[in-house]
Length: 425
Image (cartoon, rainbow, N blue to C red; front, side, top):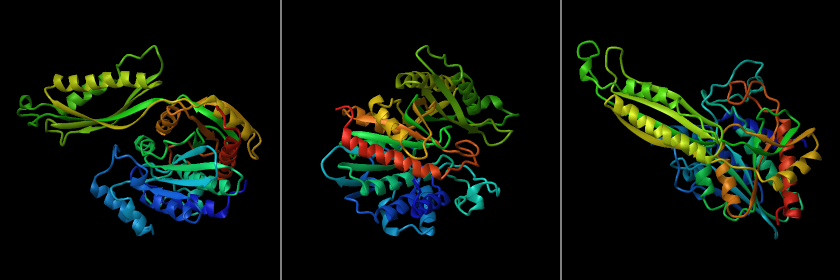
């Protein structure tokens, strides 16, 4: 499928204006602009699509700064007003007669990465490099959002009978948007859900019909507090928060592996202290635990919480631990994945189809998948490969725009086929 010019323009505009979790103000407003051109039955925005159980929402000053940035970039004021407080994201609904309700989930947030500006980097060469310096669509979510709009277009022109819902989810990169969107109510009547990702080390022309191997994940922030003192004159009067932090880090990595499956722990961001001659009274760790299953993740979390507490006690400090984003494990339903695979086999531009592959990471689409599955529906996580320089989450990442057309074809045809066959019934 040749990608329509307006969709290419949309993808490049979104790429120019990347926004991180809960700050996708311009992105949401731009998608509202685009979708309002289509004859939708409903378009729900911001707080209308999210349960009020969000994690990791920035403070008011940070949100206001990003709102101002979106406003300066030309985002509509009436839409921005609806997104106050960081309630970003939207759900588009198209009703086309009796039949199943099919959901398509795409994500819309970006990453805190400075984009390459070398002429060999196509967005830089072609004039759509990030204008929000220090932030970048380095994982393809600009393409995902564009595919979501393209699926709406394709279904509008199809014979599909049923209801299509496209979920434009915020805050995937911090695994904190999937849970409130899953609990927002719009997923309750979805019979089938297709979640999308491009790339994932698969080349353009390759499709994975049902990705598995999601690691359950939980983020945390541990803040250690002690007491300052002169490091040379009276070190005994201090209570060293950095020592507590260091002890915690060392012991986090000593959590025993588990025979039931893979487990992970990482202290990804650490800091503390104020000067070399002051016993540090404050320190912090931002980290995560993961597991091949939700139970394994919770096993790691239980150990991590104990270690954080005891490390603080060892050095006569206190620790406050708060939770960040989280996501459970999930599995794609083989019946639905088989339908996607059969569609991909006959899609122009697709030359290789894999039944399944392991993600080897975490994704909060699992919340949406499990929400549908627990209500008797089917879900599959679909990967549409893309050739890209560098890897995901790097300054040189880019999407082969041919992938957008392939993804629209695969997903929209799968939606049509679901309406005809109703797999699993």
